[in-house]
Image 1 (cartoon, rainbow, N blue to C red):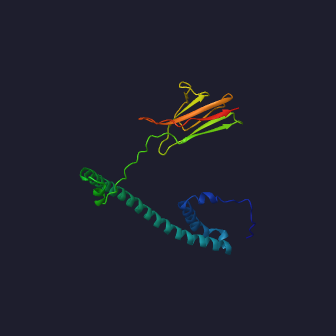
Image 2 (tube, one colour; image 1 turned 120 degrees about the horizontal axis):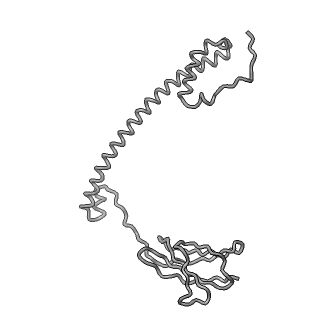
Image 3 (cartoon, rainbow, N blue to C red; image 1 turned 135 degrees about the vertical axis):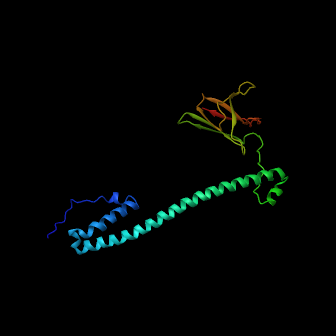
Length: 212
């Protein structure tokens, strides 16, 4: 028999290597059919098929072991979830009773329970300052309020020069950064105060910028 190699035969390798099951299914098929093929008479083809048959047996055993271990893992995970649910109930009862009887943090620590540190509430103070940046290319003025620790909202006000009791205008929103179109030439003043639901801090010292 004369064999003529062909470059027109291509094999669907991707579908075979999709997962473990598809690999083994192909190996089982080769195990059943490979030795019956006329090509099996070729020494190199026979060696490759025999090796694949042996490796298919090893892969089948490994897949069986994995499948059994995975099933055991899922069962163990379910058992763990149930056990943790029961534990949470016991813990919640213990915490509730500890909150009823403990007077100090040391009381809770003596039971082995984690005691939260007292929350520190930052005082409502004025911002640390204001930084003004004029971008002549974008024709934009940026007002950046430098916040005090733990505070995130601020009232920002703007006034033309000269400043009077009624010249201040509050800018929209309570953000720390405002970007506005470049004002007309002149000097402008800015001040800011931190804001909470419960009140407003003192204002910063006013800072100014000269727009030319």
